[in-house]
Length: 503
Image 1 (cartoon, rainbow, N blue to C red):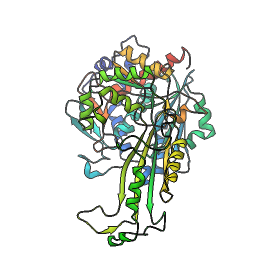
Image 2: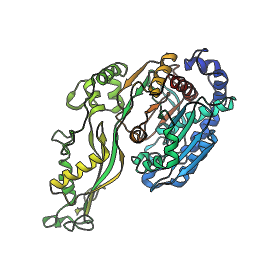
Image 3: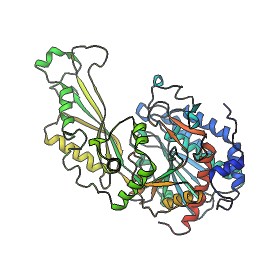
Image 4: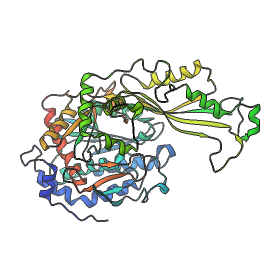
């Protein structure tokens, strides 16, 4: 489907907000290339969406890695190789532009599961739809999380090179296919000698994102919570006190129920309020918010109205009817123990009078500084063992700790500079309540700044009808072309800030 170009190159420059005297050289020529390649970029994004890698279902795991490798080569990376792991492979690529500064890029090429019956259009089609009050958006699984922003970044690299220029920075790309199962084997990718050596030469690593609000303002995040995904299982496979399969429910008079046993174990993990973690020693290493972090949260609340947040989430109140700012402080500072789903016995219409032979809970932890994955898992197992739940099997499927980056790091300074130069209002969030494996770069042995950056909009991550804005009806909000140019400008600003001294 060809989108009619509604913006001239001059209009594109104006909407991007970058004056003619900006540091991006030959910007008009690059912007023209971006506009000319728009249909090609959209097709590339739709083709990528049509090939989903879903680690949880072992879908397209070899094919997705090879596709990611080819995307890197097509974008100008001179070298790209697949890095095998004990699970889904990763991809490592380098682009040597002969620059003095080297920047790390993190991609995820996997997506969440989907149920086509819940979507208004096929989730792998990449349909272009009109969003009331927003403009034209591309709908598909992975559209905003994360293939849309990543494709815009690749388009930026192509446009710079197609306009006859070299990139202002060298690039090291690492991509994984297991982010949606908490990056189970991604540490193996980064630990590969050639990958670690290349990353050690970078000034930091960032993940492309679509971080613009509906009013056009942007958000800078200084970190993210960690995440651990795991399962608790009780049944015939964990103890001989339970049946091997579902049996007639009359036997509950003499045979224990795995479902009740699991419920009892789960109940010990949270306080009576249903949301405060009650695992022994859970808050032992939790760092409280600093006054600067609280000030940033309060300032950000002014740019993101409470009613908009409630409407987006479909709720009418926060925990304990707390004030909005208090709820935001909780959002970024509270480690959580969340039940994603419960599976046991018969769940169809009516009843079936069975005693389940197996019960499973899918859970996740969200961790804050200075918690670690190993600490959290160890405390969970000790907590259950202390209460006699030796028949509850704990299986950790993936996870990592939280990450933090200094506000004065080169990556963050570059974002501030770009937004101030272009007149984009922005807020700074101490920590994203969602998660990405930035700690793998942030922590030892690399100890690198790790951040997110990107303009443009999207929504529905992990949900039906996920979307990424292609043509914006609001001049303050970026569509695909403007988001692409924001990456172009960011690379030049990063190079400029790096000259002032690496942090």
